Length: 360
Ligand SMILES: Nc1ncnc2c1ncn2[C@@H]1O[C@H](COP(=O)(O)OP(=O)(O)OP(=O)(O)O)[C@@H](O)[C@H]1O
Ligand SMILES: [Mg+2]
Image 1 (cartoon, rainbow, N blue to C red):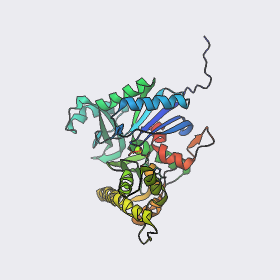
Image 2: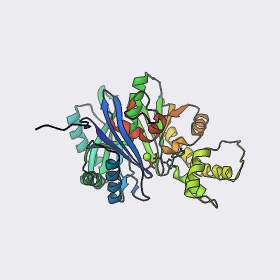
Image 3: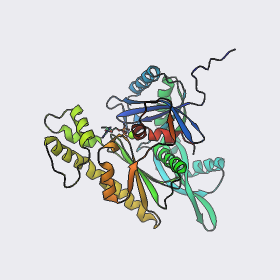
Image 4: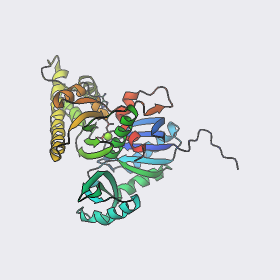
């Protein structure tokens, strides 16, 4: 029998990051820590189709996926999914240092002691966060992660409906940590302190703190840059389209800036509606992290997610936190098969997908 491998890519995978406003699909392969992107799509999802990591309209999402896969000629079948949800519970524990197989057994035995839920309805996973020495014993600091089986089952069903199979699930904090580690490795970047990655989406934002390739802490907030748009919509004559334009053009309003017109006044109010709670939450996370151990300090902030492209957000965070702030860029790590891809735009939307594809 002659196999027809024309255009087939045996190592390629489909990586999915489903967001409240955008579904991201990327077909890519990873070799020795470098990623080649065959194609990628950013698809606007219908309202209320997805919320907090849960597929509220699985049929609509399956349709949107199937349509895009066929229209854009996606070929790979194995799926890597990167997710986050307030229903995914985590706890930090200390466990004896052991092999991966033994760790899984330890984790399964230990997990019921840490979560006030019926663990049989959850899938249990773990990530090693680093090593600690206690009583002359080397131990692992481990993040236990439990995910409701009903959430996982709904993803499996959606991907099956599209003729795909779910090969791996990664958690966004972990995806972003791997991405930062890999980019730093390639660029030879080294800092004493920690990096905070801030992902600003539509209905969620998150802060992930990582250091030396390990995730130290990750927190998701149940609000995103949609708050900015919602405030704009309160102004007479502002439609959804106008709101999106004002957000992209005016973005952050810095202290001391003059309001030149009604839109500028609206943008100031919109920014304060979103920027104030965002700053509160981020500050709380930083304070919590830095107060835990005296060596914990934040050296750098890297931004990702559509909302982080708000003009002047980098300048704002730099002045408030007085650390280096930049976008989390995939330069040097990712190459595109298509010459038309814009690296900055891609990095803002597909950072979690790239990180999910990277090995642990
Ligand atoms: N250039 C831009 N400037 C400011 N905001 C932008 C820009 N482009 C997109 N956005 C905003 O980014 C948001 C979408 O970003 P993203 O795709 O990261 O969110 P999501 O992953 O779908 O949502 P969530 O993470 O909350 O589930 C929208 O609120 C949109 O208005
Ligand atoms: Mg998102």
